[in-house]
Image 1 (cartoon, rainbow, N blue to C red):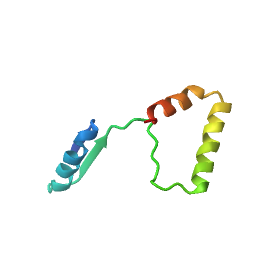
Image 2 (tube, one colour):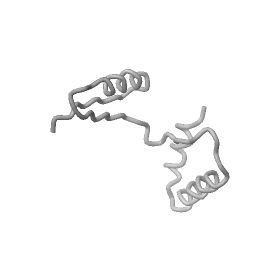
Image 3 (spheres, helix red, strand yellow):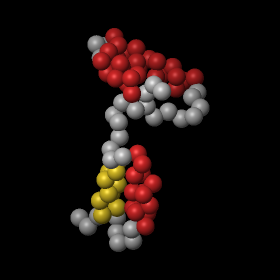
Image 4 (tube, rainbow, N blue to C red):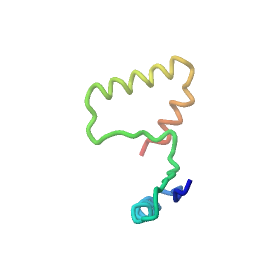
Amino acid sequence: MGAKGIRIEEPGDVREGLAVALAHKGGPVVVDVVVDPYALSLPSHLPFHTVRGFTLSVAKQVLSGKMDSVIRTIERNTV
């Protein structure tokens, strides 16, 4: 299809990969970034409705028997 492809697998390669993508002048660029499926994407400020929704989501996962997924999420997002 004529698009340049860039795959980023390590966090330290993001800046360089995006710089290459933005510098490419020969057509479209597809940037494929590998991410942790359990990483939480949260803004710096959490409004109450966001916290409430997240809590409800976790509770539904626990009640539906997906405790393994909840535990993996917690393990990968604690500092």
